[in-house]
Length: 116
Image (tube, rainbow, N blue to C red; front, side):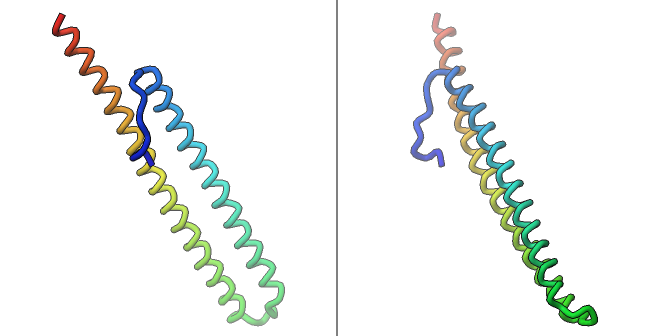
């Protein structure tokens, strides 16, 4: 993600980039959450529709659909966790790079002041 990005030298620009990174990550997590909810609702709706086709006395048929629903929900949750973990790691890495650059600038300023 940030391997090819050159960070600005200006501390104010770094601060802006830091906040933009946080905002972008937050917005991405909100989109993931919405997509997860839509997917779960679709799985539930599909199961509900499928149950209409299963005879009322067929417990085995109902159980098969419910088991499939649970498997799909578990898979969807695993995908959500993976996407969140990956995004968190990428955002954390970028924020650390920005923070290191800001601290590097502070150290340079301290060195320049010490030389005066």
